[in-house]
Image 1 (cartoon, rainbow, N blue to C red):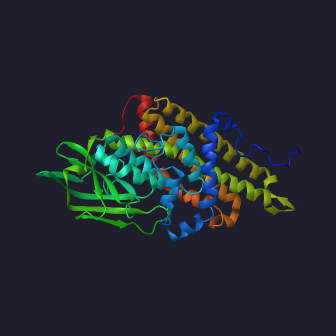
Image 2 (cartoon, helix red, strand yellow):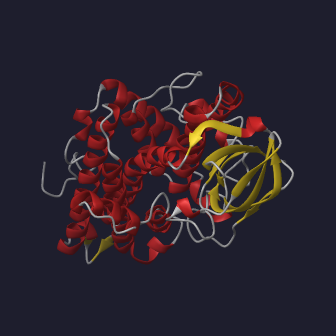
Image 3 (tube, rainbow, N blue to C red):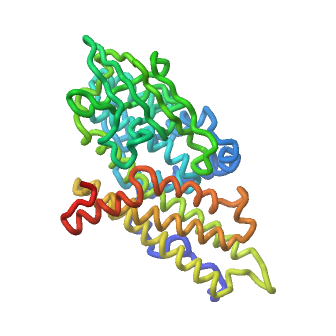
Length: 392
């Protein structure tokens, strides 16, 4: 092979596939094929239009990725690594698509699965896994984002019922959800509730004008005298441990998924650099272009290795919250830099929807913020290193 030939290791410099089992590779390849056939050809159109087609949740349900990491109740029971590999392939198409999968499975379904009653699990988990019903997870408020324990949404007892008042903001999938998992203060601490679509006193208003995550709808929610029966309470959800458990699942998916966005941006830039000719040859032959490509390849390789290591730790039951913070912080930060660098290789063409890097970069600006901002994860790690909390 000459030095001008493309190396077969361009997409896997560390040969990480060798660290996966045949079953893990087969599952990954099945989802990659689905993404390439059913998602990638349409994602630019969906992004520009600002939404996803109504039939997509059922297709994802048939694919088996909604709540795939949960066990029992007819769910897939996939390993953390298998779920992570699925997040990579879905986010390689678009972060908004992976966000939908995460909101449905890692957040809402995890809340019902871990903290719900048998009746709640029986009613919701099967339809949610199949994509026949949609759910969302309402924790963030206009004045309580990074400090969710300061939430003002309150649920008070009224006889056997609960009456819910408050607001939530930046809630993914809320405008299409059939059920909302709502976290609220009570006289007994933070509790979780299931609020079905159409409940009197509940409204969801879509947030428009977004420059990022355009395939993922987000909403501002209002609860005014929203009366719920006693059966709406998630009986095992007490205190902030419950929503934080769900957030941990979602952050694990982000550690993996962000590398999907980074890989796709890198591969797009590599392909373009190999075909785009300037001064009598492809720009891939220039030293500065190669420097960019090498930096991106290193970031994708090391970030993917980090995700795999954390996934194995999770499957062994020894993954700590601060380790998830490390993965989320490092990989999203790296993925954003990869996407931005990839755009520069594309030149002016890179600012159009004909190419993915700038779309990935815009999405990753949101991923950097949600499920814990860069600053919050930094301070979580600061406490782990020093023993001193900067948050209190």
